[in-house]
Length: 224
Ligand SMILES: Cc1cc2nc3c(=O)[nH]c(=O)nc-3n(C[C@H](O)[C@H](O)[C@H](O)COP(=O)(O)O)c2cc1C
Image (cartoon, rainbow, N blue to C red):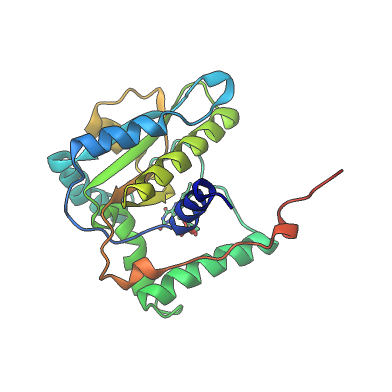
């Protein structure tokens, strides 16, 4: 393997979802470097249909204070229905990922209160100093949502390469109207998910959560 390929492998395999961050902000120059390189993500017809809002500082503190309360009070608004019911092997993988998280966080599966508390940490951005909200402009749909996925992974790998961590969060799309209202975003921009990011907290055991992956023959078919 070339040195270049080895570096790439290391960045891809060392990225994993982090759910505890230090308060220290990432400096503006590093942020610009990272978000510039993420712009290189590919997209259908180079349409680049991602509309990204990065929130830090006082604005983020307002969201961090209000979002848990609003969610607990049942204030829900999603631009894309949460109808992904996993079955079969997909259910097993979902179960495995949740178990890995609970194991790392020291939460017993039957401890519903602690599981709920862990889930609620989504709305405080796992203490991260930054969050990127990823919006899809109307009238885009599935094809362009795939472009958003390309963008998100490019961004998360760039963050990893700079020693930063991230967690993509569907949960951050549960209060789309509130996020739009707080950031002054037009309703034609639909919130798909958010990515909390910053410097990983090395002392929080939750960050040791590692998930596995299906074996290659279960995912990739080679034909010739
Ligand atoms: C689009 C997307 C949405 C996700 N939403 C959440 C979320 O709301 N909360 C959370 O804790 N993790 C969330 N995750 C993280 C996944 O659980 C995680 O990526 C998966 O278990 C694989 O683990 P890894 O990222 O550590 O490799 C999300 C991941 C993706 C790609």
